[in-house]
Image 1 (spheres, one colour):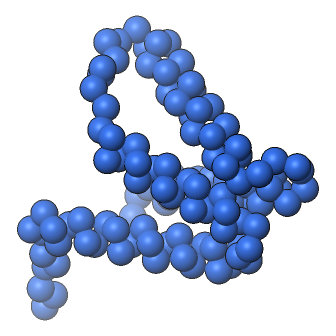
Image 2 (cartoon, helix red, strand yellow):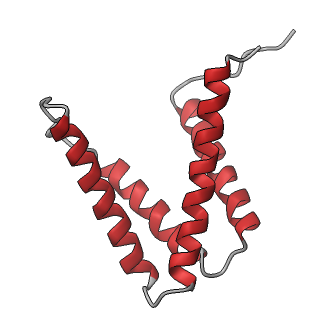
Image 3 (cartoon, rainbow, N blue to C red):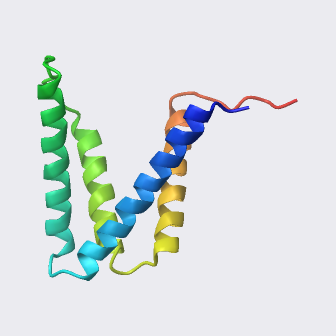
Length: 119
């Protein structure tokens, strides 16, 4: 049986992803902003919030980045910003879910992880 905290956090994460998708669609459909500008604002505001969190905790921030991860985040963000204008919410959710699962499974296999055998 799963702990109620895990279930609650999973539900919160799912609601946050759905809300992000719906807000992104509204921003791109009902305003004059283009997908590239929208993506730039999203990524810069996210970086600013992360910087503020690190500053508020008074810890030494890691001064080293990972450009491959940054590029992957940018490709994800720009791809979905343009897709929000063309895809339905259901299709977008299915594509996102499939892409995330394929990435996680592919990375695990590449790192040598294997699925356990079931009885």
